[in-house]
Amino acid sequence: MYNLYQQPAVAFEFGWDVGGPLLLIVALLVLGVPMWVAMGIGVIAMLHFTEVLPLHLLGESLFEGMDAFALIAVPLFILTGDVLVRTGLSNKLLDIAEATAGSFRSGFGSSTVLGCGFFSCISGSDAAGCAALGRMTINRLTNAGYPRSYAAALVASGSCTGILIPPSIAYIVIGLILGISASTLFVAAIVPGVIVLISIMVANVLVNRFRGYENSTQKFSIKHWLKTVWNGRYALLVPIIILGGIYSGIFTPTEAAAVAVVLIITIGLIQGTLKLSDFPEMLVSSAKVNGVILPTVALSLPLAEALGALSVPQYFIEQVLSVTENYNYILLLIIGILIIAGCVMEAVPNIVLIAPVLYPLSQQIGMDHVHFCILMVTSLGIGFITPPIGLNLFVISGVTGESILNVAKYVFPYVFAMLCVAILIAFVPSISLVLLGR
Image (tube, rainbow, N blue to C red):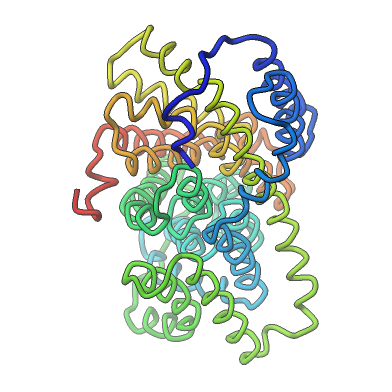
């Protein structure tokens, strides 16, 4: 898809015919209009005023935007996360996390973050993990001594790993938009995702050391750990099959998602934790989430074609390079843009809107294409807990009943920790490329 940007059809002149539709999209989003509706109206307006592409081809472009095998993985991973919660297997993952990290300083806080990482290995969505784990852990965290608002901030931060640790919907989408293998991105994302997870755990330990919220007295027991792992063996089997199958080349991410859904449903039916009567509600719930993501991806293609034909990415590159050609400054600029964007919108719409514009700039300064994708998704993840509009703050506020402001005042150690990791990833490309042998 990215080759649309390589050879612009016309010289770009910024005017209201282009700026107006883009501002209209922003205005509609501010008014609360769904992303795919706002983007659709903006695309139609841009094609009408610029006449850069025939408007009657819009319908064909929409179908082309969704006619991709990789996109089938999106609804399947969403359904996987939903089934995981309904069958109670997510609780088993949390128990394993607690048995593993519960003896650390700030034990249950650390195990909660680790549980977020386990959930991320299956669901591929930060919002889903935030809602699910928020319901399961908030009361246990408060009983351990954490203030409720701080506990909410901890879960919201740990859940950011939902798009950072593979399999991730964000990497599927950015791979589709830029023409990069999702499997390659999944491999590259392992080390950065784990580093982000560890940074959040360390931040919680440091905060707890100064505030004294939790004083864990639990001692690690290999016998208890083995028993917990055995009890949660079916829950652990899911990420092992998903990631093992993808990395070994047995099946693609899309096929892995299908296997995961069938596996969890089978386990739930055999164990009696899932009934046939649960299927309608389960499918409707997953369809609602999918109904937001896929139309946005579909509309990204005509918007990308229009922006490419109008040379908008090239214009943006020229404007940036006219200010500075310093590699370090441009990297910091990219991180700043992505964090701000992540504050306002979810990962998928940010990727379809921003990736085609920033990607040519990254190529201009000699950045590896996989490195760019990892940096983009990591930086967007920071925005999910960055006030005032971080997505995870709204999700956890709805789950816990805590006000967004109360939660937001506790997230700054985690924002700082994730920002440090993003900067490290930006300036040390080998972190993202080591498992690819580059």
